[in-house]
Image 1 (cartoon, rainbow, N blue to C red):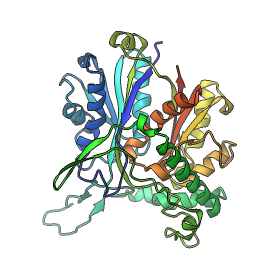
Image 2: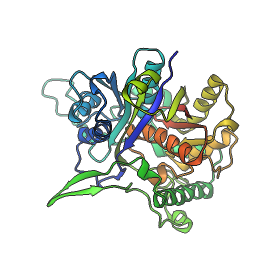
Image 3: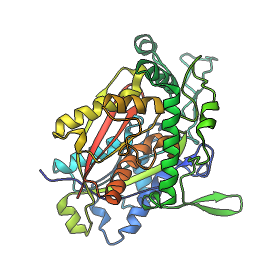
Image 4: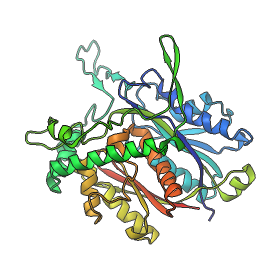
Length: 400
């Protein structure tokens, strides 16, 4: 069985909701990292690219009708290069990476781009069609995040808690205190600021030009971090999602825009196209949990991944755990037997500071894993995240 190697990666800066990337169409946003990879490896025969797999959670607006295919064409790839869009909600682009690696290991592909995109700012409102002639009932749904057009059977059987409500459920069930959540969020901001100042994310980010009323401007850094945050400021925030709750805007991830892509190749394809393998994608695992506590999903996914690969957690140098909420991140690390401030967990901060554009976050986690291994000299890393409606996903990569 041949191996699947990550040879290069790139992402856009992550923008705030209604922020720097608000005027960039979602398909254009997805095309940006693809175009950068194509131009960076201009000598590569891009007609040999077997597939472009992009994750996207929404797909109700400019990301409709297979945004992966649209983005590949917009990025200038030959029309012969196919593309497919994967939807595992928050885990979409991490699933895209695992799927691409699986195809290479199976011998059904040699050169694949995997990644994802989400413009939560540009997510549209949607209306259903009428059920009868001359119907006048009107229902409108915001597709930015969360449930819409709910199946009553699903609601009866599992509930339709919003994402913050699921975090409150996790905090209650796993006894995660508000002070611990705020301390975790503060560490995320501090670590992200240190990494940003040290140029860590510059190794991942390709600046993007965005339109303005008078020309264009270049966005080169993640927009979401709030380095001025203090523990006192976090403690003062209201918990609006439940009476006596603990989840706030300060200890939750953001609503963001961004895109990311990784170039994968078999050993033979890397040699043929002059690519340098940087990390091997070892394995992927997914797990299901009760939708009302979806945030705990990474715990069983990581446990399944470790059992499948034969490694112990002590053999993992870096864990990039998506910080959907501090409550669920802490519940996951505690289930895995890790301290709240484990230095190997999100050493450069996480989604609370950097943001969480749903379909792009998994690819960002994976490239940050490789980035951290290369800078810290580690060998193995796990990227893992929770997924709405009750799932978890984890991918193991190994530096080469």
